[in-house]
Length: 431
Image 1 (tube, rainbow, N blue to C red):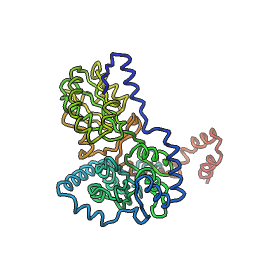
Image 2 (cartoon, one colour):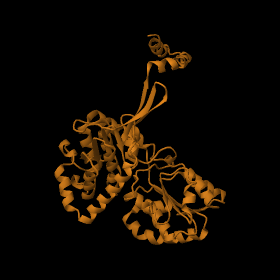
Image 3 (cartoon, helix red, strand yellow):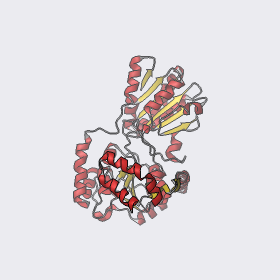
Image 4 (cartoon, rainbow, N blue to C red):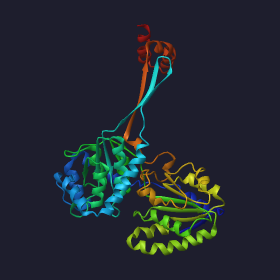
């Protein structure tokens, strides 16, 4: 845990150093390129090889796909309270997603000219659901349920196989009820490769969405162009802006909530103009983290290297720092949180007020929890219904409209030296 003061130049430099955070170590790309290439060339054979190597499981190609009876068994195994909670979350996420559906439109800006946009759902998308140390049931909800509302015909999910290929019952239940059409027990880089390139038994997809570890993130970036992706997202992060009205216990718990995700590279940052609040929060973090560290070993690493309590001059400075940092999650725990929120220009999701912990966004609030990290909130948006649509421009001209605008078209074609462009208009005007 590091305590910084923006009045101190060295501390300020340390804070600014946090802004340069990568999604993954670039040196892993060389290793991953060999895996991706082998799956692209050898298909199912390579997938089985890497399942054995990385997940320690023997999978024949007829075992890749999760069977219907596994979903039925999972539903039987779960208690009603768990199922009710998952269905509640699915309903909330889909309710929000419906409001994001883009609408096709046309209009006539000039006589004889019709312009517009047409939005068409993607045909086949894949959702990656992390497993391992943190099997994220919520990710199944926050991706699949949105694709379903968008009208995607084929929604494919993949998640790492557990012991003997077992997938957690809650993930299976969430997948099925959120709207998947097929699902695979394939993890990591080889799972991403299988979906991007296709194999003898797995049809390739048009887009891959969902978070993952550094290797999954790197693989998604490397296959971009062969298929679409949602974003390049790295380790989770949270930033909190707080004043003297905030409760240190709330802040400590919220900072730890993202630090516990498991990579050890997460970042948790508090910005406050109250020195006493920093002292109280540091004390609460020590108290609250003891039990959590026993379950999450990487949490200790984050507390030591990625947790920062920063004293700022005022809340205006805090808002500027937050906008420059562009956090994945930004909580505002101030007396007048809306006023501070209005000054934020970049953040994946903004949580306003002391009764809005980041966890509500992770689970049941409505917007997807798949969000940009590493400062990419300046140019990436969180996953939304629009990610599952194609946009086509619509352009229609009458003969008179083309004649009226032909001189401008042909003149620009001349400037670019593109004779066939000019000819395609000239022939029509003279016909």
